[in-house]
Amino acid sequence: MDHHSSHNASDTSPEGNLIALYPMVHELVGDAYFHMLAEHYLTHYAAITPPKLFGDRFGQLLLRHYMSHPELDKLAVLPELARLEWLMHDSEGSDDEYILDTAQLDTVSPEEQPQICFHACPSIRLMYSRWPLFSIWMAHQQGKMDHLSDEGGEEWLCIHQQHEHGKHPVVVETLSEPMAQLLGAILKGYTMGQLSQMDLDLRHYLPLLVRKHWLDYFTLKKT
Image (cartoon, rainbow, N blue to C red):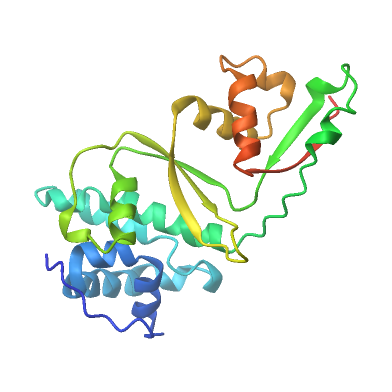
């Protein structure tokens, strides 16, 4: 596979749109290989996909492609890398509000505290990977995709918008297992009563989520 890419970033063709969605996959496999994948995708997947979800099944294509070519080890990472890139695209279209008022939490009566339900920011996406996707993302950010390491993997990733200086880039970071468990439970709509039954140090990890501005607001969930 050719790792060199000379694609025009302003290309608005269907293949160009796929490259815009999956720049890391494109850079890893090169123009010619990506063109072959794009042709296959446009022939077999694009017609059955709503326009606003164009490209969402590219990871499925990559998984099928790898399963039919298991001798090509470098293909193994691509399905999960494509999933990361799709989640980044999905996160980009979300609107975070950050209206969590921690002072208001103190006004909740002790009887109602188990009913507190935190709502994660809409841009938050959580994924588990068997591959070192974070290091690939970092290498892509730094323009060093030619120096990828096979080390790492088995990691939880949080994809979210970073709100600084009026800009909202989508970024990726790794999470510890407890942080991922807590964030995952919040994304599922668990109440404080349910969270307190998990084997987690809420006093430590919940304030971390607040400081990271990953929680948008809270409601009281009547049981």
